[in-house]
Image (cartoon, rainbow, N blue to C red; front, side, top):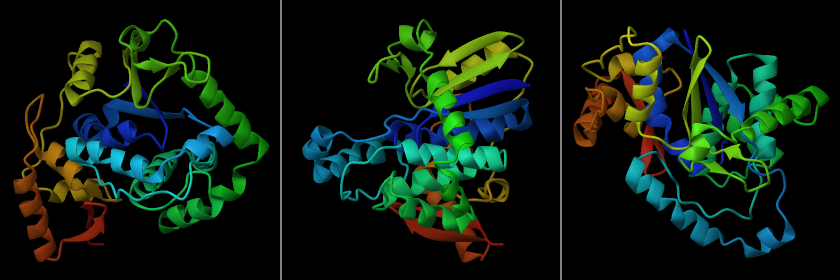
Length: 288
């Protein structure tokens, strides 16, 4: 089993835009990959100077680049103020401590809300609202508990241990707060004492070649012929961009968005799936 450590932060648009590629890895390699999530904690507070310089309209408009290039849902919603990601990261950590494995659902729920609604990453009430649909709102009550703070600080320290790694050599690290840290989303794949690093945002093919080097005998599951098995597997739903990349074949797949949309709408027409508008796109789920 290959261990895959994802270094990420829920407010990073690059990390959010990497979700289609990460979904493909989950489908292709399933239990052959053992995933671990480490929160970066890009910022724990906002300085008065940064708050004064915050341009809500410009920040929202800037996300159109990610929407148009990578396809994940973006609401382009101006935020009321600048915010820090530390408390959202702690919500993920609290979920990991209380129910190992649930941190992934919390991360996804927060990402979808942060990039399509007015949610601020350091607004506890807003975090509760974003997590209530998955029944995880209780983690917000734990954000200041000593064990959560301690585990979060360990995450931050680990994320800031990228000095001398291939990520730094490739220019995929940052020193924004001092130490050399991984940028989101960085993935480190490990097997039998050997570690291969995909620093920062990478295309799917980069992940695939690292996995192939670690275990040449590992065989990837092919894409299904329709979106239905994907919605059965990913029960919290998928975006159109995720489904399109999952359906595309080959080591360096090219998504076909129009065909994907038509196939998804057919499932909705047959009463097998639901479409929930989200930003410029939608979240597609299997009918229970």
